[in-house]
Image 1 (cartoon, rainbow, N blue to C red):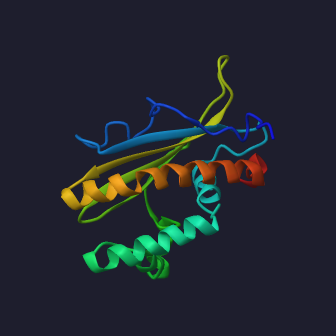
Image 2: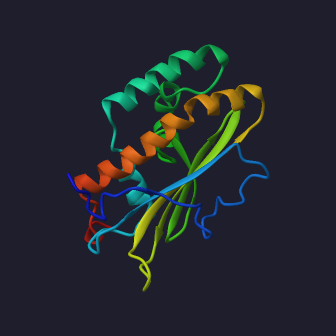
Amino acid sequence: MPTSPETNVMPVPLPHDTAIIHFYATTHLADAYAVELPPEATGDPELLARFIFSQRSAWGDALMRLRDTLVAGLGLKTARHLASLSVQEQATRIAIFRIYSITPTEIVLGENDTHLDFRVSVLCSAASPDSARRVTVSTVVHCHNLLGRVYIGIIAPFHRRLVQHSLRSAARAGWPSATAT
């Protein structure tokens, strides 16, 4: 089945205008994936992030449960722990991610833990004569120790598949409209 530009998720360089491009002095993972937004879609980065990260899959949920089971004994934060935070704490989060900053074009999410810190950017770029408007999800990770480097080495391929799946699923489901904001 052919893909339309709105469902064609492409790996791209970290956008030069993302707040996370130089966030860490050293990064152990940096990637970005973009998809075109149709003209009627919202450009609100928080709404886009909430929509993208709500696109869950059974295999992604199974991987998260496995990950939580494996790391719980190591004292690392688990999705279950993050989901059990107070209502007040949940208000400052999208899914398992803490909200760090929001601008009119970008939301920065992430988490700090003993083994690594990471930031995720959801950036909505304006259309230009050379390209359509698009949303880009970028991730940067800084590891603190050997456990962090081993962990990111193991999960990186799954992370990439999950980000691409979430973007593709959001595009197929139909982006929230600009009138929804």
